Length: 386
Image 1 (cartoon, rainbow, N blue to C red):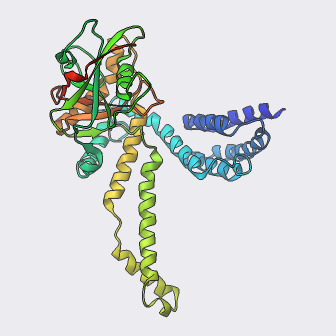
Image 2 (image 1 turned 90 degrees about the vertical axis):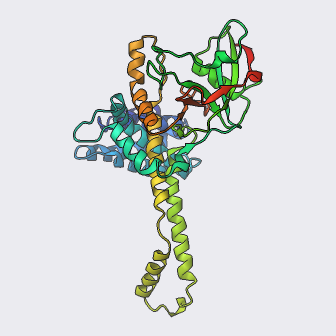
Image 3 (image 1 turned 60 degrees about the vertical axis):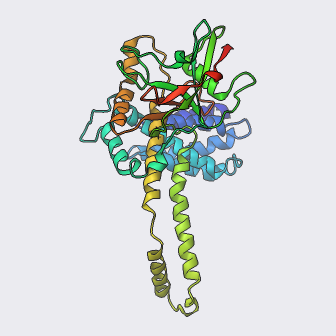
């Protein structure tokens, strides 16, 4: 068997270690193909995978869980020093995070299909979200909410065939139009959202490109852009976590722990009685005394855990919806409608959410529950032939 066939065989064995965790195992297999496997590495890599798979197939007969996949990655990292040394520790940490998100995807997507349904005695999606909202988001509002600012770049596009004025950019009241956040009967204002008015290319600003993508614009047609200004600062919830990795929010806890350890160590080392310590017991006593001086910051823990949860949710629920059939679109959007209604009832005035049309950019949109919370700026209207 040549090395390429050996690699394919071992990757197939890896993917079949567990039916329950097949999604996570397939993702790991894809990453090995993409980031590890080259003509130069395949011989050594096939040997490493063969040894790992031999052990894991024995384990899988008795027990298997997500922790085993994480351990697989850690072992791979240990041996990959000799195979792919350019992959640093941060790569493996992010791979573990991606595996965790992929493993959670099935659970989240199932709950998201019906946010009100609870199975097997577990809480429903709405109940879990309400816990997070009441116990964390509402308490630490500055970490999860923002206000609209005059400097924000918020933009809208229409495709009328004739020159238009600013009133055309205000959405018409509707009773049957189906969109991501507003159910039939409600009219929300949808805009692209950026903090900086940056260029996408020589012809388009990033905000304009996002508008065209979300509008599903057709080449050869004429469009009109218009920037808006806020008329109300509002109370906007950020549900767009496409600009940071899960590791970013995990590191909040790791960095806080390291900061506390350094402060405690410094406190002990600066103790004037340090030379008088005669035993480990006295040193431990000094450490305990220092620990009382530096409390764990509960707010950092709550923010980190909530943002990890929101990151995982936002990595799973936002998908392209291209269905023309209204019944299928309604099925895809119904959970968003329930969540939007819940947030409106809690005093939220809008949501920042990611662009789903192009994953290569970190695009964001904003939906305002009151279409008059922002107004079009007529001087910014411009025609664009796509």
